[in-house]
Length: 198
Image (tube, rainbow, N blue to C red; front, side):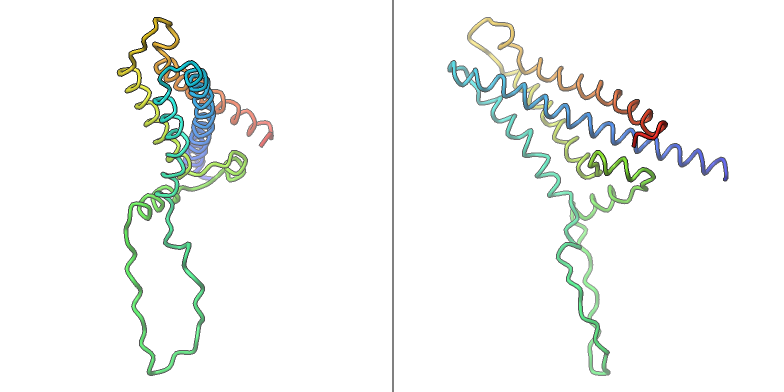
């Protein structure tokens, strides 16, 4: 086998492992973010503190990936029915094919679903798709931005350190969780592939 082909396959495999690791890290950071926001929201609601920013961020944190996934999924082939093939006659008009609308979902789905898969079992095990990854990644960035805005506008009446800095603490924890989980899963997947674990 050609050396350039082997190195190209190695690069593609490393890229796929990196993407799956990042996706898995995103999901773990998302769940930890949900837990931290709930741990703030419930006591704040009970004690009468302002819990609305945590509630809104929690809702957006879980709804945005679904919305982006819906927007980015190419729906042009979903409603296409199998047409009956009839013997053409001389009187039949041949319908021209309608032009495909290059909507956001069509362009995005065409771009992200065209990747070459060398490790399909890895993607199947971790339920990875590039649309899911992109949807969760954009949602994660927006959540970080909203946490930053919350910290800028956070003016608690009490002097308790945790309540004053809960947005930035949550932001730091989910960012660090994503980073460390990405490094862990990248090494774990390499190890599993080397020793037949996947």
